[in-house]
Length: 254
Length: 336
Ligand SMILES: Nc1ncnc2c1ncn2[C@@H]1O[C@H](COP(=O)(O)OP(=O)(O)O)[C@@H](O)[C@H]1O
Ligand SMILES: [Mg+2]
Image 1 (cartoon, protein in one colour):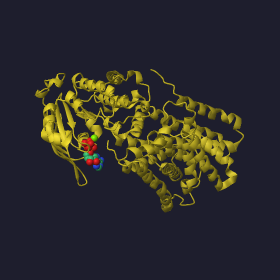
Image 2 (cartoon, each protein chain N blue to C red; image 1 turned 135 degrees about the horizontal axis):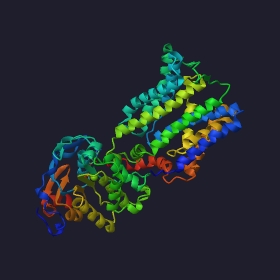
Image 3 (cartoon, protein in one colour; image 1 turned 90 degrees about the vertical axis):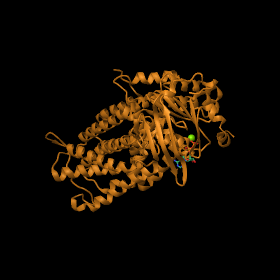
Image 4 (tube, each protein chain N blue to C red; image 1 turned 135 degrees about the vertical axis):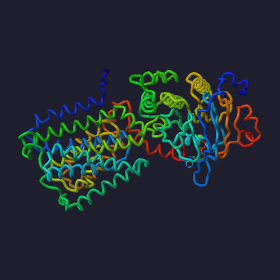
């Protein structure tokens, strides 16, 4: 792996791993508009893979295609199995979790029940009696243990994002897709979240794909970065290189 | 094992305790006993409706379709095939469940208002079907008459003594409400409520939303059907007039007044609305003007219904539900 001064804390062994996710010729049209246009990429197990690009570039659509929220053309393979066009719940059971760009939580339920939902419905490794343990592990990890009886609706944006992440972790995924997890947060909240995402990757051994606008965050977190524009890949590579790319500068960083 | 005593359970049990001893004071008053039986029937039905709409967030308007399908099924299999009414009630419930699942299927990919339309189509189509099926013995528009009464051993229930009917209604509605309560607070209920609060979030967390939605349709139709079956034998005569707008509105009022998404508000609402209905009876059709006014005032003053207004529940769902329309507006157009 090429690395910059900023990538010290990344796990450098990543590159040697077999791909956990393979996306081939993925396309999605909404009417006449191609939101995702013949996109192919591979992600080695253990990597933090960043996706950036202008608004409307098709980033969220890529997540929706991978996780079965939308049907498109092309192929998605996870852990060497074809998972194209599976339903969202099947994708989750296979080991892919995601968060949503516009935070969504179960607003009338307490924080504990929000996380329990993931453990109960999404966790295929659940054995008798370890549901509570999995929930508490996730709550502890994101730091929501003290808020577990609070009604989710009453939590602020940062904590809603933590609820989404904890619930996703309770499904025990091997791949986690984060759709703009930093968006809308104050500077004081961004740092802890970056640390959390890094720990998810390094301590929980979960491969992460992160859509993000803040280049600083992507530079710090991701091993590789892909820039999308009008549904097409402009450039993929180590963040420092990608950010120096003329075309990337023109269409995105401008 | 840790047993959690919820406020919902305490209110539910307290209500039935009152119902249990009420006949000690009222047994001579057949008129009031009769009203109380109707309260239990419609109150339980409203509670099941609230389970579907308030907790599972599925806007069904087909509950009366289920009720009537089950009532006719039970009425006809007992009248023509000589099957025991107890079994008839069960068969009626199962038939309603089948209809519920069949109506649920086209609703799987639809949302809110579209589900309301499809399920209301069921409501609208049942009456003409009963009329068309007259040659099969439905009794057409006059109705199905002389439906066999319930019996227990050698004792056959009769209209001259309503007390056995009363306690049967009590037991059956209690069981129906108990299933509703148990479901709401089980992991199945977690699934329903999650899908209601955020279907997308629920899907990312691995719930098979089709399975759960069909389960809601089937269960809600079955429980409604059980009440319908009981009603057929109690009333002795049923007709397509059960699908009229007045009783439909009354049951909807029970749910709104009692508190949407708050168990067992709708059951309590049943008593309030039906007794009010009796007081206002001299006004005949004009009483709906009063009801209309009450609804407007009630929604203004206590949008969460009576139980919600008492503010004893920590998760106040009624408010959320009423706020939902506005919320849907603001998030529309944004992708997930
Ligand atoms: N469900 C949808 N129906 C129609 N158009 C959509 C839908 N989802 C996304 N789009 C359009 O596809 C394009 C890509 O959207 P999206 O993937 O959300 O972009 P990004 O996440 O990169 O901002 C946008 O032009 C958007 O308006
Ligand atoms: Mg997006």
